[in-house]
Length: 240
Image: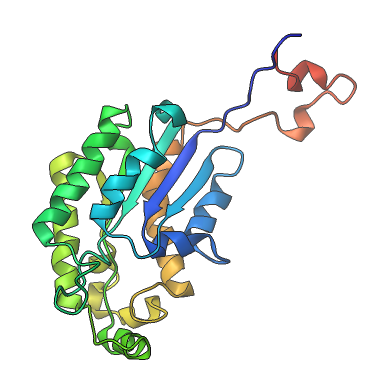
């Protein structure tokens, strides 16, 4: 018996913390990307709520490696920093020093390059801004003190941009874009840290042009229905 060839979808991997994990919820930015790439790419959500870049660096080789066919990956987003930038005294478990955060991002980019996922396929995303008053209310409900400051998160965001420049990747600087022109960035956040519907829309609209450049040459997978010969569909649809 002959073996049929498999139809392989190229893949886009969204790798990040809770903002990525939640991105496939209704109206989420990941769901928007997946919908835009239907019949062109599989969009894989590899968001890990609460993770920082140190933990991400450890698990990345378990998520993307030679056995997962890295040559078939069209793009990878790396979206960490919201937890790394937590204040050490208030949240020592998630906090990662800024210089270590930088090295962790570089390490992940180098790892991907080592398995043939070159820097032109990588998009870094900075953490969004922190709305401290709203996030403090969340912290109090959890029995802890305010553990993030927007000014500190901004330093990590700038560091992320510098890594992208040094390593030759694309970058989406959410922290800066959401605060540009004195706009009220609070509307982009649901609880001071995570994204609201408007924030998801904002991220999706700015990420899509960067991602589209990387997948624009990919073909529509399997024939359009109207092009199929209904009297002999096997001629176009059956793999040899």
